[in-house]
Image (cartoon, rainbow over all chains, first blue to last red; front, side, top):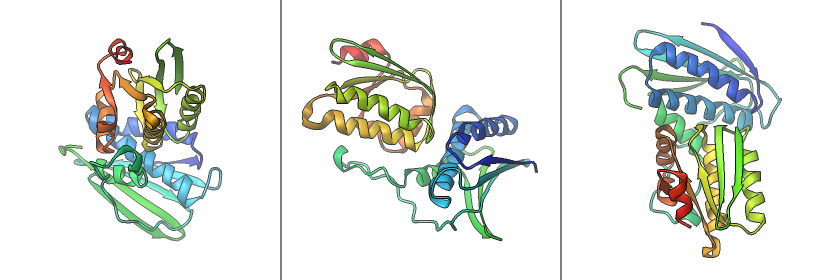
Length: 138
Length: 111
């Protein structure tokens, strides 16, 4: 499984997205599902920079992917602050615009667009595994 | 991301192309602030060539809508929203907050 290392800064997001597009094409996802995976990875990487590292240029993001018969498995590693998963909240509908909160949206997107999301912390690394299966609706 | 801004008499059209992510969203926010700081609150966002928008970009859109709708002085409307972008807006629960038009001409005609 090849690993690609990117500097933990927002400019890296577009480059990581290019790799995700290669992976989703290779796996054979349709446009909507591929867009969802791209979103999930983008949100996860933004969270790594913002929350795990607490800002840009403080560490790296390791990206790798593997394609099996039925799944696209993307792994992201960082050595920032240990991630503590929070409760995933669905955005509240029927809330007036002025009260509409936009917090936690990234995490919600990750869980909505992917079939499986696993967090692990090993040897000082946060390890996030994102899995998209074939034949599932996004 | 590329931004093209055209000022019309009754509204401003902002064409956003490419990727709006955590890296580029601040530039979009800056452009919209520039327009609202000039006292203009009727904005059409033309999303025809928008390839990608993350939650950071969606936050800019909702922030702009809050600013423009305050005191009933205007609003942000969307035009040419592509299916993937629409899915993201919908998933975020943001579609009820924006009028969505099939093309820029109808969007401008709204004002």
